[in-house]
Amino acid sequence: MTRENLPTAASTTEEPTEQKASSSGRAVKRRSFLKSLGIAGAAVSGASLITSLAEAQGRGNIITVGDVAILRFLAAAEILETDLWQQYNEFGGIQDSEVPGGSGSRLYTKALEILDADMPQYVHDNTEDELTHELFINAYLVSKGAEPVSLEPFRTLPSSQATGAQQIGRLTNLMQLSVDTTWYTRYRSRTGNPDLGDTFPNAIPSIATGQHPAIPRTDADVQPDPSKPKHISDLTQAIANTAGFHFATIEQGGSSLYPQLAQRVTSPEVLRILLSIGGTEICHFQTWSDKAGNAPPLSVVDPVTGLTVTFPDLNSPPLGGEDFQTNLIMPEPTAFLNRKLPVVSIIRPTATKGAAMGALKFLTADGLFIGQSPDFFKFMRTLAIEADLAQRQ
Image (cartoon, rainbow, N blue to C red):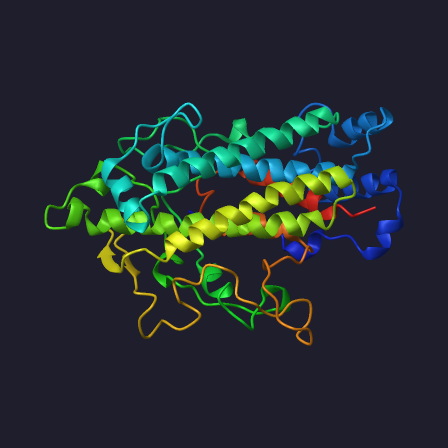
């Protein structure tokens, strides 16, 4: 399936001189810009975002149109994260009253536990965290008289047919992923920073191209192999390994997105929200970056796709060295702002230009939205454009 082409991130940022415009002036320009793209009004249902904000500000609230646009995009991102993490939890996490749904997949869970014995608890807790983020941001928007975000009309993707999954509509697709693992080498580099134009190789090239499952598609993906330890087949382990790297791929995105957008908010309270939630995304990322390195080496041909999936020993030649060392789970110091300054340990990237659209493009390239409707992409593009047009006042 052809993936949706998205506008370039650079086209979504206002010129610095527009920072002096009034709130109403920015609103007119923003709506005119969206109208020129043919998507005006796609991001809201009922009353328009601008009208809702005008009424809210009239009641003395200090939150700005730009702040709301940023929060709405983040609410949508958290809804999508909740959806994907819920699927992981149904198979490999703890199903309880905090994160209900699903019944588990015994061999998939055992394969995750090869990466770390506590994986079910970690998957559960990450799922619960994303759900609280989603609910809090939407409730905060409502408290300020702004429109919350719902993606329910787009919950149309099929569930896995493997035992353990709920048979409900999904927003995200975890069965056809192209997992970007450049974060692995990026955070181990002492010289490179994407904000300064540097690029990085994938740690696991075989899952970065093609379409690969990170959860069982059917029960055929989790058949026992008596010749293997704990009866975990190479295919099942490869699917769990893919999930282990995908966990970190998703959470490193959140680690960057929150500080990127925080630079554009106006309200100190909204800034506090972004810094507080963003910090938990960093906690998630460090956890998963540690576990991914424990993925056991293997090579297997996926009988469904015909693709060979290979997980190398990252500590051995031709890999190894600092860029692949598996026990380096804290960001190595690197260049920041300009190369004349001393290196420093940082989250990267954090450049704010086009951050929301860049995040949407990244998630799309990941394969999460394979099978989604044109209306879904229109809705998400609008939210991203609105967020990237926000300027600190």
